[in-house]
Length: 168
Image 1: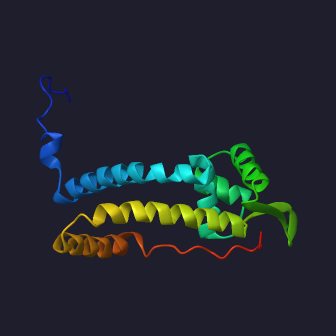
Image 2: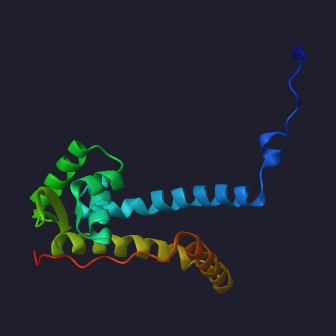
């Protein structure tokens, strides 16, 4: 059978095919990025780089985990996560230990100092967001709270930090 030549069948323009949920997702994505960029300024107070803070956050919130699990969570290669963990350990923010059942596997845990540093950063970020929210009228703040309830239905409840194992 011979294929017909000529212009391809017309398709709806991309914007015309967008659904209300797609538009909402696009706006939410943009707002989340802008909000995180704004509060990222508060991270300077920690004295750590973004990759180090990110890794420390995973260690604090997920609890002790292997180097491989941490590398996977951070989407980096094992040598990169090894360097990051070495720096966190040198700063007294994390510790490495051998898994008791298989001493070839290294477990990374947050120290109390690491958990405190992350908690202080979180408080600074929350304070910055709270300052922005305080400018809103009560009705608008209530709308955001309802939207947060819906978002938590999608992503699950907020994670809480796992207590640090060391008293450092």
